[in-house]
Image (cartoon, rainbow, N blue to C red; front, side, top):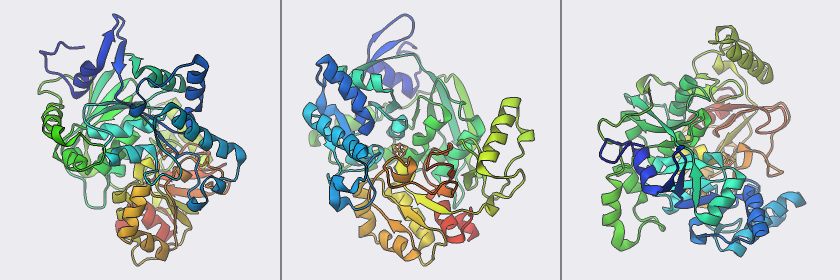
Length: 471
Ligand code: SF4
């Protein structure tokens, strides 16, 4: 770690600020500001109970019911969950959270939603914090200039018990997105282009800092989309330095700084940027102006192409491993090299998830669907109950219903297809605004194409992969 007199990156500033203890080998004990958990925290609570431990700082642990809950019949509560074991998983989260006194956003809470949507919208995530979570998409919160990363089940237990974690040293990568995004090109297209360039292993061992005019021009929702998928590039975390866009988003959030500490908070947050001349371990640049609407064609987020492009030929891959992976992906996806992406016929559309289930995402999808009819069946799942209420206030739910799509309750739903009801027919082909497309993610044999909400909406109308400006 650089001494503080040298120019430092944003990551180094946050890391230093949170270091309790450092070992010579590079490991540091890092103080944790917030720990985010969901139903998958059962083993962590079990281990705590076995050890007779309590939460060190329960008010800094937030529990959300999101993965295993249904996206329909919310008024029926837990009875809407058909499988007893799934019901038990949700019941256990709520019982564990209550018993240990952490903040719970349970199934029937009016603030309920996907943890990576709920925490930011309440103002719980603030610049300069260290956020950990038992979910790899905890990286979402880097959008606020926080260091946010997913941890394993045993680390969740340690974070809850001690409010600190031993972490290895991290390398830094700056990804500079030059130019501005063209009309009809969204944050999802940008991050798919980034992952397409560096690959799903391209940022392993790094904390990414996103910079450049295309990043600065993004809304907080767009920045969250970008940081959310940093983990898909293998990164430990993704960061966007806080700026006026961040500050405006945080103002008046219920869990922001206390009224009399805003000035101090702003003053500190403004220091949270990489110093001029700070050295990064790796530098990547992207011409954001050249990015087009994107979709995945294969079984990894790096298997992506512009919507006006073609399915690639594995023979053109850079190495043997790439050729084998692409050939296997094409076999699973039942696609042929050279096939136009825009000729790929779809069976279903899913608009939602912690990547693209925020209000701006639903507005983008509704703008495309307004006055149109979807040829495909599909569901629109808001990322949180607050997003749902806001969308209904704006009449977006009526746009989706008029187009023939189902309007659901906040949940992870078809992003992961583990709630026992939201699962696609075996072998079907899906347009999805989520972040993972590995085999079986949305059901047995399901072929998932990741894309932006606008492209998913346009694809719902045409029945094949389609950019909004191609309708
Ligand atoms: S929406 Fe998907 S990626 Fe996000 S937390 Fe839920 S399951 Fe994980």
